[in-house]
Each structure stands twice: as structure tokens, then as C-alpha cells.
Length: 203
Image (cartoon, rainbow, N blue to C red):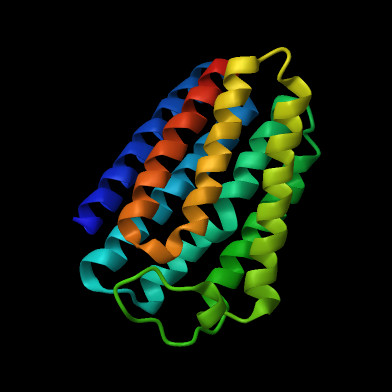
């Protein structure tokens, strides 16, 4: 059941990302591309949870999960918010970060991963560089999302409220990792839906 819920959450996030890609193809707005990439990363993280729940966690499934969910989702979300308000200088910085994140996720040595519950990164990765990079990237991305949403909430009250709610649900889902894949998958699906609604209303 947990694997099925995580797989369903992945399908939903991929479907919502596809909707943003379609909007980007029509409007060519860079923030739509960044938001779509963020939801794709979220979907891949959920697919990795389904993988781990179905066959047991391994080094490979954990690397995919950590890259997509731990290193990329929030920074790409923040990039979209910054691009929305014309901060195009954030794009090259984000691209460098993403390249670094991919390299770290592939090359960082892991303590052996096993079991049927979502692994705790602190038990398998050193603080530097992998966990520190995730802390910095997630903090910067989340602050960008919250800052832009609060700054523009008077112009886009419903859309920004949905985005803030999505970020909150995602944060709660991260806090609930110890409760298992099912709860995390449900939080991913709900957060993805809220974020998508906010993105659509804001453009």
C-alpha cells in the first residue's frame, strides 16, 4: 500500500509538472520552466520512495531520493519565485548549484543503505558537503518562496496563499519522514497540488 501511495503521488506530481510545461511552451515565461522542474524533482523523489517501499531501500534509490527531494526541489521552487519578480540573475547561480548538487549526489560516499523505511540522511551522509549543501539550498529556496509570496500577496492573494500552504505541507511532510512512506507520499501529493494551484493563479 505504501508503495502504491508513493507511486500515485509521483504520477500526480508528474501530471502537474506536465501542465506547467504546456503553459511554458505557450508563454515562454522562465518561472514556469523553473516551477515545472521543481515539480518534476518532487515527482522523482516520490518515485524513489515508491522504489524503496516496494523493494527495500538501496544506495541507488536513496541517491535518487536525496538528489531530487533533498537537493533540488526547494531551490528550483525558489528560483521560479525569483524569476517571477524579474530576478534573472538568480538563474546562473541556480544552474551552478544544480550541477554541483548532481555531482555531490553521485559521488558522495554513503554508509550502506538498507531497510524498508525512508533512510535518515544524517546516518548515511557526512555533513560536508552533502547535508550542508541541502541545508543551504533548501533554506535559500524556501526563503525566496516565502519572501516573494509575502511581498506580492496583495497583488496575488489566493495564488500566494496556496504556494505558502504548499510549502508548509512540504515542510510538515519532511518532519514526518519517520512515520513512513505513506504519510510522506500523501504530503507530497497535497503539496504538489497546492503549489500547482498557486503557480497557475500567479500567471
